[in-house]
Length: 206
Ligand SMILES: Nc1ncnc2c1ncn2[C@@H]1O[C@H](COP(=O)(O)OP(=O)(O)OP(=O)(O)O)[C@@H](O)[C@H]1O
Ligand SMILES: [Mg+2]
Image (cartoon, rainbow, N blue to C red; front, side, top):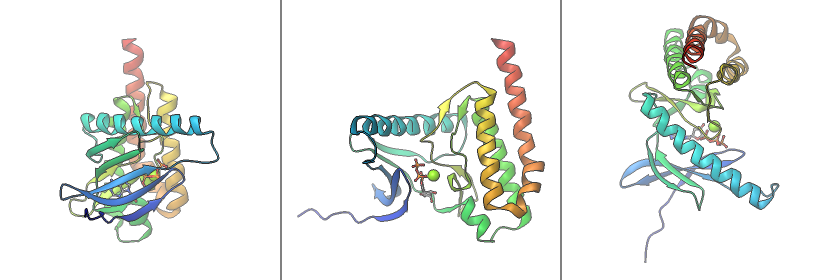
């Protein structure tokens, strides 16, 4: 008899459950977007498939741009499953709230995050849900890694890029009110410079 693989729930959100799994002996997570009964079944199926495909496309595009995001292992659109590399670490929300990062390290993380968002936006990729729960810090390497691209989109509009930054700012302000001013003023301003530069470039080539 085939032994059923065991898996543990890592997180349950409004749209998806994340299981800790393994594929070919490697640690993975499986993101299952479950059915939402409050939605019309056809609309629900269409939205779920769109978000899954968009998430996969955007993870691949981010990685091609040189922005760290999990390696995608397997996609099953019929069963709404996305299997990807499991990041061994914490979200920035957990790490910042847990108080384990010193001020200098927090600034390093913010600086790195700023560079990553600038690269995404220069490649016209909008993350769509830039909250501190969707930015992970890998335990062993200290690398900053972006996850949860389900609401991402391609756009050259500076307004869409600005909304991404606004969401991030709101998330930092609500989760980390004491550290926010310094982090935003000193680090995220660099992203605004990049967005302006990008707009100039887009305008001048169109
Ligand atoms: N690749 C990963 N490695 C490790 N942990 C992960 C990974 N992906 C997700 N997680 C954990 O699961 C949580 C939820 O994942 P995710 O943000 O993708 O789903 P969600 O917010 O519930 O989804 P959605 O917004 O698409 O409904 C993350 O905050 C993180 O703690
Ligand atoms: Mg999320």
